[in-house]
Length: 116
Image 1 (cartoon, helix red, strand yellow):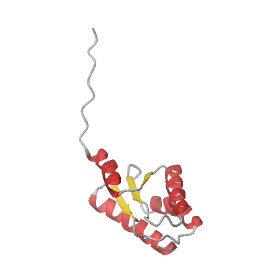
Image 2: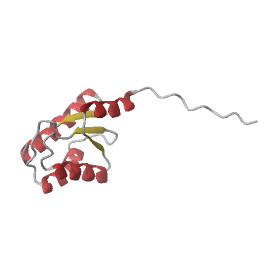
Image 3: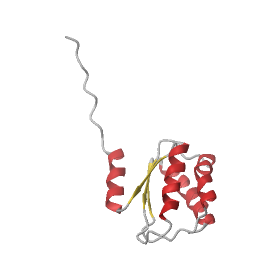
Image 4: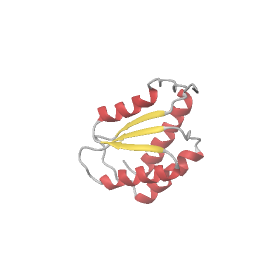
């Protein structure tokens, strides 16, 4: 994966989110090798914002098995969080799916306290 791939993937994800009215996305990089430069990663949240990415999205990223340039993924997580996007890294796809499913699960209505 190179700089232009990261930009293209960001555009695809934003398009998918908007077309499907979705708020969750799983990005599986388990077989990826990242060569994306840190400055390019730094601007990805701004690019996503320009493209109209919703602010309430949750992005689960499955880390590469090779562990090559793991710090680039950690940096991406940090800059996304600093920009206001919820991004979380996972070792295993099942854990990422479970985290995203928490968002989709119906929530119990808050119990209303009745004054005595």
